[in-house]
Every structure is written in structure tokens, then in C-alpha cells.
Figure (cartoon, one colour):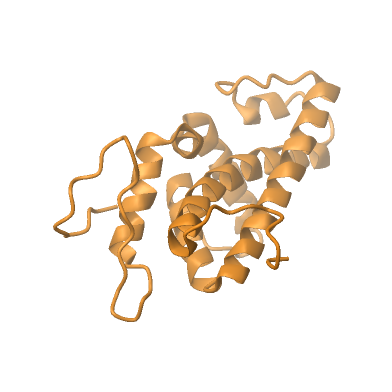
Length: 185
């Protein structure tokens, strides 16, 4: 991701760079790219997408999706960034983005619970340095391995996407995202 050309100060670890808008009032793509890059560099819950164990998991998921003729991304980081851009393009109103964030939170909750249940049942390591692929080999049934690995991937991806989109939501609508906001559901 490249830095946008603005007269703004260079972003630091203290806060994400500001969003800029084009003449139509849409988020400037370069400033959004700068924001995504900032989160990847400075927010550990987003930066986890660059961890080798998550990258390994991403490539497993890409292999699964190749059978479904899904788009093949090069890296987990690319998948996250494109997903953020696509989410903002598809959910252009406050209500739509709020609903999308709520769906992501639901998917994250379900993935987290699934991971906890399967990890406990099969005594899998939950250490963040552990390879989910290696741990999944301890699960005898192939279908359950796939469920576990998919949930691991969704937990990492949804966490990162929620962090970035939540910040964008707050900057677009001048209020923090809250799952139960009056009038949004």
C-alpha cells in the first residue's frame, strides 16, 4: 500500500492517518489504503494477519476455495485489504455499514466459540504461535478439521476487518459503532 500525497503530517503509531474524501464525498482510496496500512503496522489485532501461522491458514483456505472457483488472493493481507475496500463499496450508508459490522461480529463470535469447543474437545493448543494446520492434524475426522480451520481463519479475518471498519465507521459517522444502536437494526 502506498502513502497518499497530501499536505497532512506523516502518520505515527499514535493514531491512524485521517480519511480524505473525493469531490463526490466518497472516501479517497489512497487515504483508505494508508489507514489499512497503519492498522497492519500498528494494531496487533490487525497485524496478526501477517503472522506466518495465519498466512499458512490463509493458503489452506485458498486451496479449499479453489475448488469453488473463488478469486485467488496472493496473501492474507491482500484478502483483508480487498475485503475492507469491497465492504465499504457495498455498504455505502450508515445503516448498511452498521449491519455489515454486526454480521462480522456474529461471525467472529460463532468462530471463536467453535474454536474453543473444538480445541477443548481435542486438546489443541490455543497458543497464538501454534500452527492451526498442525493442531488440526490431531482431529481424526476430515470434516471436523475443515470446520476448525475455517473457524480459525474467520476468527483472524473478522477480528482484523472489524478493527479497521469500526474505525472507519467512527470517522464517517462521527460516532463509534455499537452493535445495539437505536434505529440501526
